[in-house]
Image 1 (cartoon, rainbow, N blue to C red):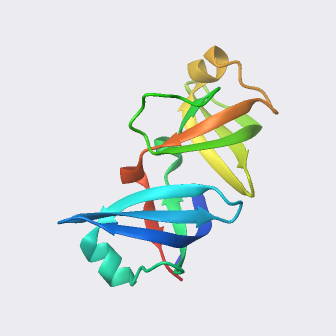
Image 2: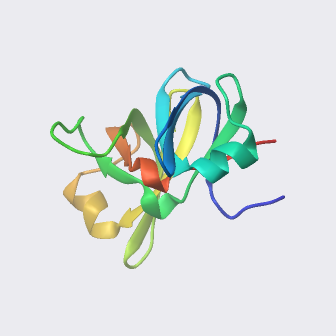
Length: 139
């Protein structure tokens, strides 16, 4: 199956924490960073997710925010440090490619944000991704 989602990060499930309806699933990415996904218990069961399961974490580029430093006091679980690799700007929006410890990640942000954050190739950034915006897929 082909998907339009640009961000497809390979990893391995390390923990599954079950709630009444939802679960949080921690995925160790290939570069060693952890990513948390909040998915339904039905999805956990249907995908057969247990520690050790190989998965791909899927994140739409529009769901990736950028900061120029780690952010304290924030409910967003996933803060992945990296560096800007490439920026493509249009009239209103920009596509920012980031290298995050062993994986490429794309963020779709406004052109104004690129200017305000003074982003250029090599700029250190932190990709911010809400756990509810991470989907998981198995092979």
